[in-house]
Length: 267
Length: 293
Image 1 (cartoon, each protein chain N blue to C red):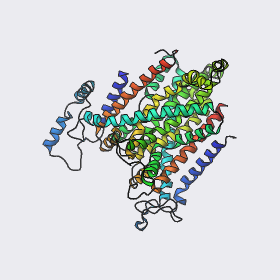
Image 2: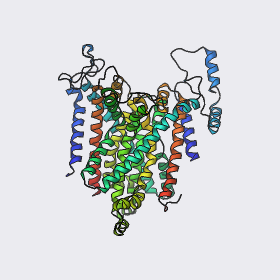
Image 3: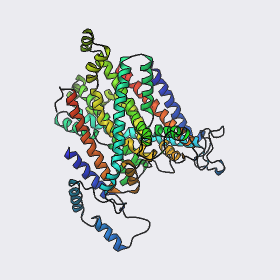
Image 4: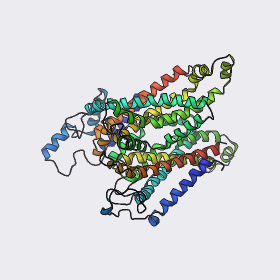
């Protein structure tokens, strides 16, 4: 716990988490409330982050947007965790040819522009937020699979696995009850590092209009909405800067936290 | 390699065909005869297997088929018009990231724990964390509107190219610099470097002739994933700076459900990446003779 950047990252993540959880209670305005007399106002005491094209309070929208951004990050990380851990532990535990083929497939998938397939899937299946959860998680499992496989290979020759087998435990039981509990450290670290990358991808898609659809909004789609209002005639900078800055700060904090956890685990 | 592309093509073909809703579904229903002719033109009236063979046959000849939305243009023409722009943007950005990243990382490593080192490392940490679109919008606000140094949109003149290339290159420059610093520090601590110093070479010669070649290998292997990320990143950059590249067409195609154009772009990008990864492997064996292809 001496790692100051990681602790700062943790504190910020907790702060954002609390705000996002309490949003319905503490948000200064309601999400949809339009006030057409207060369009395009810059930051002020009344509206800390200004107002948008319909006079809606931007800070309220950023708070609600954070709920979506973080939800996608968490759900995507969870999906990638389930696929990656299952795939990696099976490959590592089976070993031999199964392992070879399975990891060769991972190598090939690594080289592909995965985000394009997410866009392809979103084009075909429709742009729903659940598709987004699954598609983003399905993209991110590769690293997790590699790490879990490597650790499983190291662990599976140890005596406690042999002991379990001697007692007649099935392969599935050995993996779930004996190997995975020993892998929990690296799994948590990489799940933490997966959250910001999923969030970044969600922001990327939403920014292009291919992710979260209105009336819902995320930090990425808020920034995209704001971009329309940056024109040579007038630059309503707050519409872009605040959603973007919140996203950047949160990603930064999550990365610091993940790096700190990794360092702590490796020493 | 060919098998990978075949799998991608097949998977995306069937994904598209099983999609709910045809490409001609609109609010206004077309007269039956017109719709029938349209379907015939795009071979949609044939059985699925025949459609697949027609599409694959086209692919082998390098024909990606007609666009569903731009009625009179084929996917090939659209790509031929817009792809060179994206390619230029990507190549400039990757080269810039490589050159600046490698030099910054080397300087930071040689002057370890100096003010220069700390400054470089803080800037790069920021560079990695900032989402690309956010950086692009900030640069756009600052240098196109607040301080009108560069034009805000378009492509072709050098002034229009500066900001997009900088934005696209920023995260990779930062990442390469950090990678290079770590790798250079590792190499500089090895015995053969001490030997090189002991025989009286200047520090510049030690670094440039002895250390650089070994330290650069991780960067070369990073270039494969970097190329993939540049392709993705360029979509966002093209949107922010209104550049008429392939990325812009790709997003519009995805929004308009122009299946053939989306699929053609995905196939082209996959093909390029497979090719680029092969090139990286070959480059690797030149730098490190121990690596056999």
